[in-house]
Image (tube, rainbow, N blue to C red; front, side, top):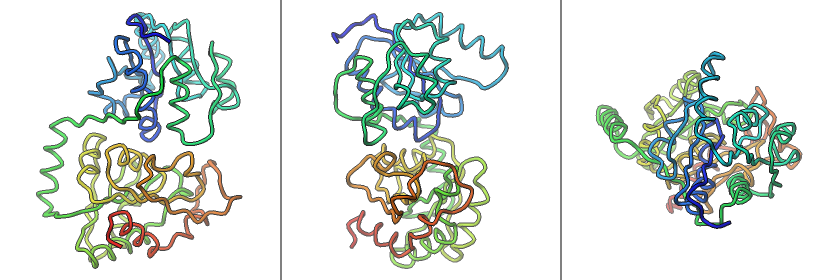
Length: 336
């Protein structure tokens, strides 16, 4: 498709952190293909900080899950922009409705076999098949269906100076030297590694290399972060709650991140931070670190692969011993 400056794209991907990170290269490909076009992104307010300052976007449109009045105002704003094309990267009925209500005459999404909720596909004017492989490649394929050409894959993440200053202040006050980051949460417990093992990992890396751990956590993950710190005992990890820009600063300065299939893991990959990913039920071929240099540990049996939410630690995650993670960290950092 030829470059056109009169194209006006609306991106619909409301959340969450990892999913937003995985969508960034698709938007970069749209910008490279349509340098004069307008590209806006509709996103839930709590995730919008990841997109602020993104050079590929003209505007981040914040979506609030509030009253009908707030929804009406948001739709009115979208329709006033007269988008020529809306692309639904989320594939839910909710996101498809917002895509339709934007008023864009052309609405692109995955077909009913590929959309997360197949019924969403009935609201698109153009439906794309979903290729096998990593979700980043799937999102790039959707951008290509909307007219983007294949371009170099990039993850633009901007960090505001005030986030740099705040993290520097907090680290200086803690007396931290070299550090690594743990992100023990993950939404579903079946995707998580037990806090006792994270604590043992803290002790072992502190014993071998003198590194202290920073235990990052989001809202609702305070209990698991405290459990990791208690299990680490004399290794004395630092527990930090951060917003998204501060998390980016923290990850950028870390020697390595160890985490399950979580948003912080995918943000770390986007920032170029070394990663060791701990995977159980979810498939790393689709949801793993999007870097051939990073290491995935997975001892799951084929029949255990699932994206169903589980409330208990999965057998697949429990098969990952601490010594295997220590060896992977050393291998990823060239210490083995």
